[in-house]
Image (cartoon, rainbow, N blue to C red; front, side, top):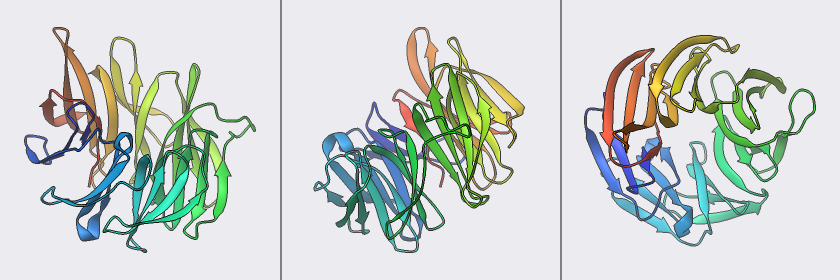
Length: 294
């Protein structure tokens, strides 16, 4: 997980009972991605105009790069053995495992998230409130910026990729009407899954296509599981300010990073759930804001 208060990258064991790796960031980290086959990770530090590639086993810095302004997010391409990296100024880069970059074009306005579905790049651009779909040439093959009724999205904030069922899920935080959409990339079909003004964040269980989302109330927040059609299945109350939720792609377990308020002192905890049963937790005085499961 990434901590944007202590500037740390933490690797926790399965039941969250201990830390197996603690890596101090050179600045406030923004995003992290993994190259599994070569045990490499890439961290972006946009406020420092820097990204680094490190060893996932030891945490050692292997390579750094300060030639890209505002590197923001990246994804590893197994077929090319390269990272695709976006900066928040609109450019796309190809980065090799030694952190050497190749400019691929200024083709966005303000991209903040990139992922892959098969051999296609999925990019969220908050300046145009749209989802770009590119092949790896890179050439744009699709662009999603409006709902089923032809209305433009208001404030896209996050997407998740389901590479098993070939779906892209994304959240539009319109005023008083946050909406979760599902786009079938093979059928080119968009559908509304769920609407609630209090949706904070979400993730997808690719095995059964259920959806785990945080419903953020003023006094407390709920972790809610929805069916693939948007019906409520499970609700876990008692969270304060959940920052992130992630579903384990192998067994469907759920990790939630939350800030709890105890005697007016904010303390962070990370919870691990199997369905509605807590099987572990981790306490920190930092601020874990992004969780990764690999």
